[in-house]
Length: 275
Image (cartoon, rainbow, N blue to C red; front, side):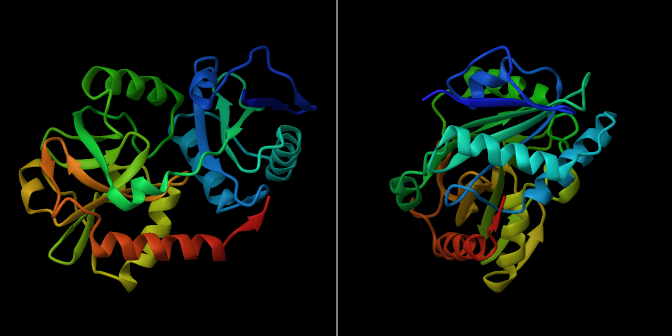
């Protein structure tokens, strides 16, 4: 099923001059700028959309793009495109071009739920030594950079985890990364990664389950990690049971990860709002 795409201009929604079968394909048509990706729930509900838009404005500030979003107009355009698309639930990207920040590209694709088997069995990820410029900003060039890096280093991995020069595991290409060691949850400090919306939810609920330490684990520690998982707005909590060739813990999603996943889903459901 093809994507649904609209261009929100000061004069309202307009058509774009291309079609695409997915958000990834649509990204190849988009100009340089900043973006945010989220999903809908129950057809036309959202989670923390204003937080996504706050981060988009912060990304624009970091990238020196003048931007002040008309949130009412943006929400109205999103509702119109959701109705037009008719998807039961949608995954969407909002892109603000550098050269025309008053023109916002809104792209929707059908949302596909994460297969239950991934949450039950966990996923395998690979580490990739790559430097992300301005990690606290969502820049469109990062989409192309990460796609090329994944194809080069780990095309078959579920996700790639960025490793810095000190061999610290920072974040996924499109997610945040966490490890549990001796009952403590570790994740990289705020100033080294994108402060994902799902990360904010996770750090809100985690202290009810386990102490939290904002510090990255390192490659040499992989054999000592009890549990690992990732989070993203589209996927929620996904257990990681293997990193490179190292099996994490007993090779099954651990109790802290499972408890956090359940609490995350409940928190999300309790905080949904109409678009």
